[in-house]
Length: 323
Image (cartoon, rainbow, N blue to C red):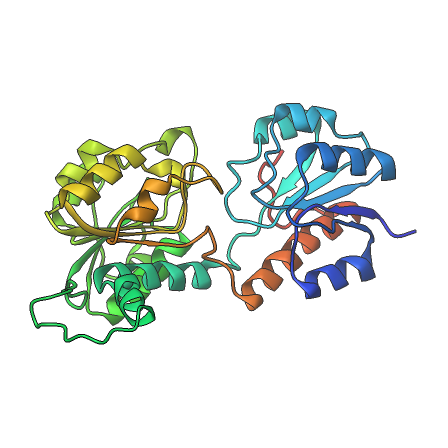
């Protein structure tokens, strides 16, 4: 018999087809991803051995404790895993995995799109055209800020941060970065390392955020951090909404301290702070930076690879904890 899998999130046709071919798959059909209660019920009713989900499922200690003993592995189709209580999973003996590496390029593409659109007022230009245009725009109106040759600070120089740095160099930008440790020269590629995050900020015309979520980075971009940026800086966040104090960000955007922001993630999702929707100097997207067909297929396939390995008695490819 094929192992039983609860596919708890809406995903691509290719991932669904592979799940059906290789597993006895319980496929969720609905307008949104399964809730915790629905996952627990489906896993118990079918004695499922695996769950494939994404960051819409808060797999906290209570949810992990409520899963039937049959569940041996939970694979999140995401890089971030702050929605999973990893210590609770480890204590229960539940293998949990993520999908690193496969979404770096698309996420970096999206971050760069937000940076360019925020700097060059792309959303505003689009609205002008959709309203019909029909008037002359003077040379002193609707001015953006130049990107080429400017300085970009990157918070978090992991795989995605380094992919953003590669794109920034294509615009002749000077790359600065802060992370927990300095990269070796072959990865640093000439970027300037700042061990103190706040010391980097006064030198950043642009700040692109790529650090993980969690208690250690919660509201790392607060009023103090924003005040240290040069006047007229541009902020981009395609990482985690928890990294930013949104009240402080709103104040910086409305006071003119920041020229603009590009935001793909928010502290509350999908019920994000609607104040940002009313600002012309913000480009918004709905936590969708990895949303290309190629990348979402690759993420789902990597999650299935992890599940198959564990259920076959092999080590997980991308475990979130190791013995």
